[in-house]
Amino acid sequence: MGFIFTTYKRFVSALIIVLISGALMAQSTTKEKVEAMRVAFITNRLELRPEEAKQFWPIYNSYRHDLTQLRRSFFPKDDGSDPHLDANRQLEFEQKKLDLKKQYLPQFEQVIGKAKVNKLVSAEEDFKRLLIQTMRNRREQRPGGRW
Image (tube, rainbow, N blue to C red):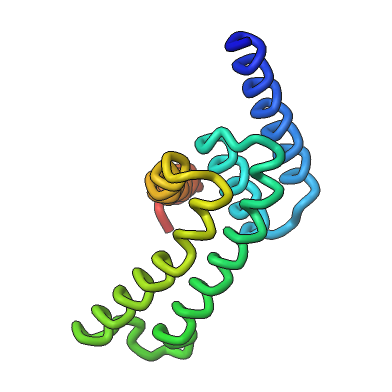
């Protein structure tokens, strides 16, 4: 039974990666590519079963949407103004971000369980680091150096 389940997980993970790779080829914008990479990375890291993924992704997408709206409410648009917040405003933003995570935590736990929610937190950070490293590598490979 364990062997069959492990084989099934590997097959599903490989299938997801192949599907995401195909989708990446068809997508045009960097943002879409990053989001597709995020989906593949998190799905693989959490080892989401298809029935979990079906329930998890709408909640996660709602969370990401709310997080984006929160950022937009705190950080000015690209109008030449200083994008940094003063210390009090930065703490307020961090608190609201934490409140948002706490708001979604029970929904995530209900769908994927506490163990996978714990993995989700580290998977998001690992994806962020991977994305930054990938961008640095691409920048360094450009002719003329970093810029």
